[in-house]
Length: 404
Image 1: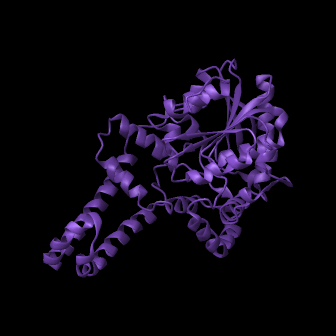
Image 2 (image 1 turned 135 degrees about the horizontal axis):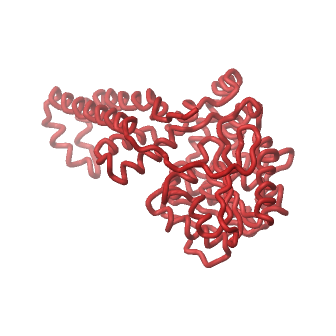
Image 3 (image 1 turned 60 degrees about the vertical axis):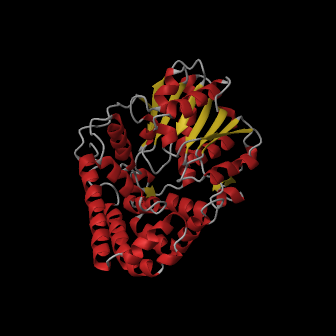
């Protein structure tokens, strides 16, 4: 059945609207305090002091309220423009090489003259972020450069996956997909993981070194307390509330996941859709926004066990960096991964702060660091993705000099 990610988006919509209303009410409530504090304003705000002192309180409140209401209308107009935009993802899935349960291994072909690579996305977002649109597909670019390219498509957990933990995905599904790739290519393959997929790829490379030539970790967190430790503390504080909810639901609901992502930058969706409302719908920028926002709102839930391992084990207890994250009874230790490894760190990443991604370098014995002037998602599908990531990654996989 076709999915319509725009039906309820941007998810969770009520949270985004609540943020705007809170901004409105907070701004109005703060006006008297701001006026009384105006003489002490510093920096770029100091020029406002004379105007605040002389401003008519009622007129100032009306102006603030009008501006807030204008921004809310603009946000809603952006949502409607996105929902009604005629653009839809046009890329068809390549052939399925192997499948089990809800997991598929997609075969993008390629001659294989430059070797083969297995691409591993996160479990929480759809795999097609690596194959988003013409000209914005890492998978198709690498295949066009002579790599044999395989992509794991996790899809949403089905009945067979309902009780899956990370070990079931890595030591079960992922290892089978790896060997299916090796058989199809006729030799061992490189492995590249994006975001959460990088942790899965790292564990896979440690467990099956005989099948892996190289490992690429793309915007992959490792030390979850290296930066923004307050977010980890928040998740730990929410555990008494979240754990019973996960137990009752049997999974991590999509809207709850999206709410946690939104907490990283509560005003982001508002800013995005207000800006989109100003774009020409026929412009390349508008079409790029639509394709990406469709993907953002087309997420999948996590199984209960995976949610507990990632939220409480990774973020809360920092288990990977501390060396106590285990897959199928074996601790995941980067020091055991001796194949050439590339650690790609987007310098403008707000989802995985650069310090969290760089931290794995101190534990890898054969690693190279590549720091990019890009964001977490822009690195993968932005207008400069080909020059920023695709081409130098292809060169590194091929053993050529790379522009990283």
